Length: 575
Image (cartoon, rainbow, N blue to C red):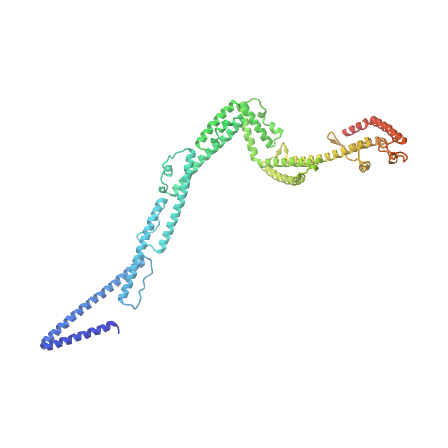
């Protein structure tokens, strides 16, 4: 049994007890029956009135609960619709009071949720409006009077984040461009003129509208300023080059040049004005010293002729170079020619530098080749001989590779230009082949010259016996038969030289056999009966005198016949 039922039973018991007590009191008092009935009726009416009143109050409470439940249900449906939530499902089997409480509590929660969403929407809308004002963009398409869903709020937040990032990017870009614009204006010595330029330079950075149009206008303004700055720099650079050339041509002292050192680096407006003034001054001075200037230009032209390997005909084709009539027209012709040569060298610089590299490598190779044939190279004690040999071998390998590379470049150039690539008026590859051929011939001539010199020395030794040699060397000379060619007056004739040398040897054969020589060993021995130091034996003295007489006769014969081989050799050589 529930407590409420127990309390109700107790209430009935109390009422019965009270009626019994009233009945006893009435009997004790002696109240008649009719009055008892009347009094009992009063008690009944009183109790009934109280109960009716209580019932009416509870009925009213039930009515209010029903109304509240109905109202909360309607509000709950509206909130669910506004918040885009699923309809609220009521719990079954609960009392009316619990039902009203649950519905009311859920309504309160949804009302709070709606209030929070609206506050978030308001804040996001205000932030979006600020960004739109700065970026000059359209507002986010979301009705501020309706309750947004969670997804809409998330999308709105992401939109605000993107807008914020875009604002930061544009602001950073604006600050960077502004800084460059200010620097360009300073370099150009220019002040802001238009309202847009004043807004950029003078106004607060945060107050500037970061619209796409303004950013594009900023970039356009910067491009214009940079273009003007680039033009000024180009003009300044051209002035510097012209000033440097005029300084060199006019031989301006270093002290005067240092006065303009500040303007030779920077390219601001004041530097441009100073350079322009100096250029005008030098041009006027050039006209006053036109002869010296033309001669200086001619020196430059000669340098570029060498760099570009111009032939004699190509050089003579520029007739003003040899003119002695120093006029402004002649100066202009020389200026145009030096510009043309510079452009020509620049267009084909890779080829010219490759040819120069080949020439340097070839010169070094020839020097090392000469050192390789130098007898004094073996006196080296510093290790240079091995280095030179290694370097010579490397050059011998690298030169063909360089020639092959140049040939490919020249072929491409000739196809593009539709003309031959000449070096000193000659095809480069033909020039290279001639150099290798001349080198080969020179090496052969040097080899022949060394052999002829050796043969000549052998002949002189055989004729006059002037060189003291060991027995081993004497045997070698006697068995040697010179057979090499001889080089005289830059020409070679192996057959003629061999024939002339053979003639000389045949002419002197008797003389060689009877030339003064060391006496036989048997004659050098002293008689056993004599002591050393007493003098020579008669026979030995007689033999020595005979040898002296024979030697004098041989020398006289050689003197008489000396001119014949010389004439023969000379004649044969010139043949």
